Image 1 (tube, helix red, strand yellow):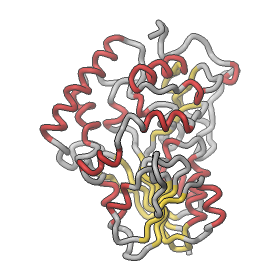
Image 2 (cartoon, one colour):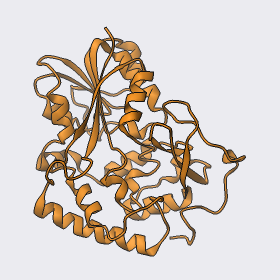
Image 3 (cartoon, helix red, strand yellow):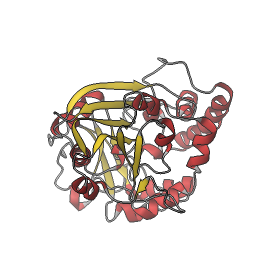
Length: 326
């Protein structure tokens, strides 16, 4: 690994003069900068840890600012989402269908499925291998993904981007869902507005997201929570704001507890010898050693203990439940 800090060597021209970037939800200036993160350093970590090349997704960006908005939303600026090559390489490292088959559904899937009526026509945005379909067998399921997993396309999947599909199917669905997708996109407000377009008046929009603070943000140098993978970390007020600005009425924001399939994140954070403070990313051999130790101990605890008791912390994720006005 190159010998430079997560802070980076110098400020890129696109961030000069220094400014407070605008919240991608409200358009208001950020209230504070949490830290700078070097793009070269992040790219090195992605290559070493997962064998994927993040550099093409970063373009000419030299470092990112990690900022907090007035809603509590934490976001990377500039926003650089992973490209198709990045995600195909990353998903080749994980056999997601087999993982869901072994360990069951996420709790947020169960929460969302319980809000849907039998026969509802449901669009699952960013469906990947369609694990939510298995948690909601009582609905008329349609999965949408521009980058489907390798292999034949199943009959329940539409290979398309959300914008085009929403214009061609305006008001066609009783519910539109997105689970662990919103944090990956550069323009989250635009995505929620497109979801609102596809649902009928009176229909539901359900969005599950990782949140802050949470176990995910307590793992030092957690690449899964960094650009170009996660561009935003969500709060309840941020979810309510994005729903309102997309023309939706917020019914509630639920907390999804830990389930067997995602509880390894809880245990890794719990077993970490180092807890991030104001900074979440740092070029320190103590942090690297802590990450390795936490991953090994967390995996062992996950195999031994499974999901922790509900209410032990902030939970696994937040689930926005909103409606398109009739």
